Image (cartoon, rainbow, N blue to C red; front, side, top):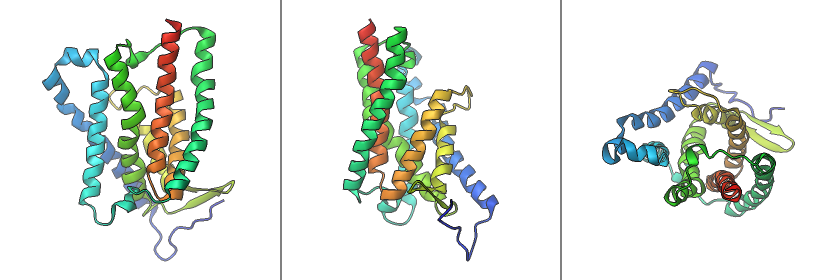
Length: 250
């Protein structure tokens, strides 16, 4: 049931809503397009990039963060309007604690138990587990990924979309902003490489569920504190479990 209403006095045309969402997707993809410059390749060489794939992942997220901060920097208004505030910090941390408990159980059921039963694990881009690579990946997942992605998506994109996608739904007492739902759709699309459009459906499922959660808490608290910390905790727990399982089995 929809409780929030579109601005009655000056309703936003559907075309403008779709255009706004498309422009936000282009904005994100523009940040990723900067990786075509190949700066790490020129500075470090192809062989080093092949040996340490996390370098390319860091590059994409550094551009993502740079674009988001540049957008915020040239925009008018206080930083708090983009969620860069510690307002409602106690509420954010209380919700975070509950989130971590639930997601820990999800990680056990989804990532740990199946591997223990099959006794097989594939590290993918996270291996082979050299210590420098393990440290780089763990820092990325526990610290950096949430900062870059949440400032871009729940900070810049959701805040911009909220001016046109103004509806709010109430489900089981929880307010779900339509701007957050659209942001989550873009968040899912961002996890598909347009140059190699293979869809990782488990990843899409996690991106959908977590994206909705991040958007709801951003809407409720007005802050990115919880989305950033929760994003880091979710990705960090999964990767830590993967590495612990690998070392346990080998």
